[in-house]
Length: 319
Image (cartoon, rainbow, N blue to C red; front, side):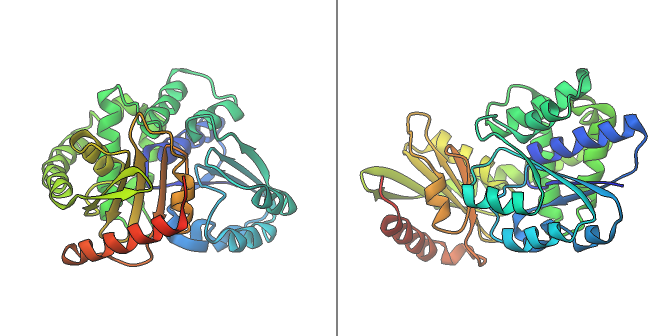
């Protein structure tokens, strides 16, 4: 049995899953799919996997720098089969050694741009649909979106994540399967998705306007830091992009109503965002990172929370 575990929160994770789904569909091999987010804790690696004999687990776009990495490693050690992990997030040598001790076959390159590109390369996936799926993940994760169907998929995934905050994420898993079968440019043409997309984009426009209404500006050791509030109707990436388009700053931070935090930087800024996210137990890439505040944030409490977050960053980070 093949088991796919990939990131549920963005197109790169869903694309990585779609690549592996297509691979197993073509070979006729059985597979299971689990789309997981970091908020799922140790259930990022479902315990039922440890009971499957001769299993082969494929993990993609899940950062090894997990808050619950020790619990995940312990479950991997109980696995009766192989575990292959493909990722591009920053990690540490200590975590790598821990994974090796659990016999994990790690394929890691933080400079690859996206996990989906690494999955395509690692498993030598050839063909136009494979290429298009991997490229969609790359466009989304590097914030260099050039195709309308990629924008549509980003929006659909954000909407489904809003509707499916907890496991199981049935809509997202179904979307991954359809992308695997039809390819990303074709799946967004389905009537159901066209209607859903229109509905979501109307909601998203109002949510993004709220982002600009809440922005607060701080001086952070000579850098201009903009902090704003967003509801879970939009992703941290979309909210941060809206903020960057309309507010001049060096660093941008979105605090979500459910507690998620998204760090971004301006195109001219070269600050590595990972250490900022590390302050809150998060991580990511030097140009885009995330963390979790550990509590929900109401709109009327945002100003106080923004001040608290700023003080933690100011005292915990030096450029």
